[in-house]
Image (cartoon, protein in one colour):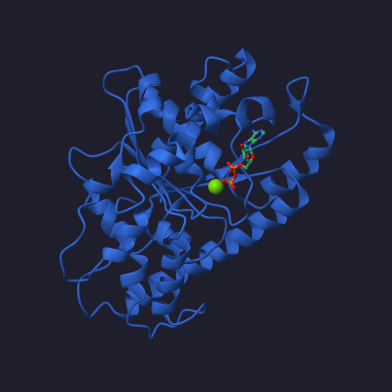
Length: 311
Ligand SMILES: Nc1ncnc2c1ncn2[C@@H]1O[C@H](COP(=O)(O)OP(=O)(O)O)[C@@H](O)[C@H]1O
Ligand SMILES: [Mg+2]
């Protein structure tokens, strides 16, 4: 099982769209995929479920919010399996017998959980003295470790648009990271900032592991691999990014992060209606051949990078 966090603390860069499309395609290719919606806006959840379905079946007790709230260090745990739903419409599109796309839904008040966790840490700046550091940051990892067997081939964590406790818990729970970005000036600056926040968090976490190595159970150090930056909403002309975008594409490569060769073009007509249909664009019959080819090439590149990534 590989766990991949989809992160960028900017909103509207295509994290959720990419998570839904990559997950759905890999499931359609016969794999067992679990998507976890960590954003209180719950756009991933509502990409696959109608709000009334969510309200009737999940909102009361079966979202990631409930798992976080029920967590006890030593006490009984909410079984993770009870949170998992299998969105019906997309799974009808995943014709292959062995593949499935499952979802752990979010909740609109997941933001309260975030605030409670932050309070438990003792404020925005984390001090190594806090007793609850691992309790907070390893909560999500603990949930994933308790997933029912036989497990999933791939778990994708769709993060909220910030670098708060939930995003950091996702980083602590993942093997690899995917960074969607738009080719514009703010996103380029944003990636640089994200990179330094990431390094700082991983460094801090691992230092606290070292400091506490003589107390309690052994905690694995974090060493997530950045699979790469994927450019989304790219305006193309004659199948190439328009000239105005090229400086931003270049600047991102100069940051020293891996960058995907494949990109997602801007296409309002294909991506905007996907949530209504509860099927990501990549599995839609309405997809233009050019976009279908581009998206599948992106997913193939994603899988190749997942396979070869080394910490
Ligand atoms: N390639 C694209 N072309 C056009 N619109 C897109 C594309 N990808 C995403 N969108 C739209 O942009 C908005 C933000 O995308 P989303 O995936 O929700 O971003 P994030 O999760 O980073 O906030 C959504 O309305 C989505 O439908
Ligand atoms: Mg999102």
